[in-house]
View 1: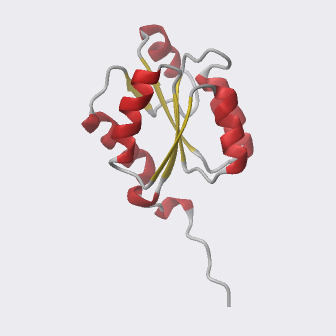
View 2 (view 1 turned 180 degrees about the vertical axis):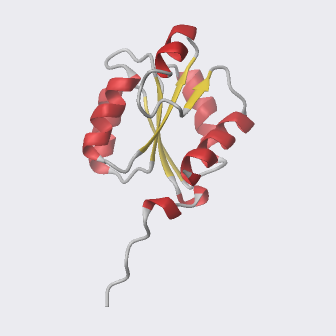
Amino acid sequence: MPIAARPKSSLEIADATVLLVDDDPDVRGLLQDFVAAVVSTVYVAASARAALLLLKERDVDILLTDLILPDIDGFSLARRALLLRPTLRVLYISGYAETTRQSAARPRAANFLAKPCRFKDVDRALRTLVAA
């Protein structure tokens, strides 16, 4: 008898795999350190296109994406990512007030972090997202 896969709702934060997308190497490095302290696996991408390629090759539970990217904005990336992986959870991050206001009008944008953020902000946001 095959073992049934765990439903997504029972995902444990320590077992989660995150794809982090940010074009700023300093921010990306800091966020990677924050996320790696909470989850088991972190993949990083400097662009939306690179992120989509990773999503085709790797199992990912959470997409953590900047909203302002050089090639495709974070909202569009999330829409495309959800077509590839419908159970993907999305956490947006941005340092711009305008994108913060826009996020309130977007689906799934309740999961939002403002830059600059601290480790405890990232930790809380990831845990809340996994618990949902």
